Image 1 (tube, protein in one colour):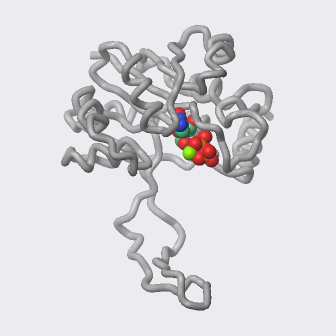
Image 2 (image 1 turned 90 degrees about the vertical axis):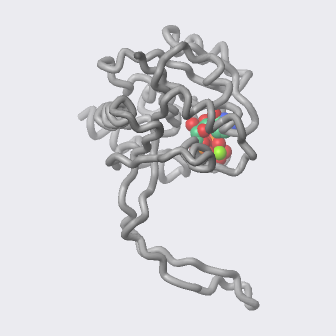
Length: 223
Ligand code: CTP
Ligand code: MG
């Protein structure tokens, strides 16, 4: 039994373009990583490992004294492996992007319940609202549409992604560096990945626009 949440927070936030790494950006008086850790429901009684840039380990330990802090690597998957190495003996491991600081409690519990009920790998996902076009760059330099993709069976996938310990270890045993999420590594090992409903509040902060939305949501809910 037991749940451990591993939070990769060691990215630099290049696309966000703030002067500090993304997890350390302020949102209405608290850093993104503090908000992210705060949103993990107490009911899970989870241990927490946060993976940060090597030069911010001390800062992270000040901000999060009750959490295990370890330095990350150059790629997200390396940071996740650093987190796995520091995790306790929990049977269920969640991997959760620091960059999703408003993820509601029910997303965590849904993922954990689905893993606990016997699914080795579970991700939260949402239907895609936009019409999706597959393009190629044509001779004149413009993108030309090859086809419209059927969006009905597509899901935009979020975190926390939940795994049995065995599934996450297997997924990360052979990482050739291409997957952008942990479930992608699991898929490549032939592990079944199931999808439970995600939530718009589990959105990822990637760009300055995303940060504006997150700040607006936080300041509105504080009113
Ligand atoms: N991450 C990490 N270690 C890395 C790269 C990313 O722990 N070497 C983490 C980020 O901190 C983030 C999550 O993985 O919580 C998702 O990555 P992303 O949104 O791409 O964040 P960054 O890599 O920081 O942003 P960018 O790609 O714009 O630089
Ligand atoms: Mg990145």
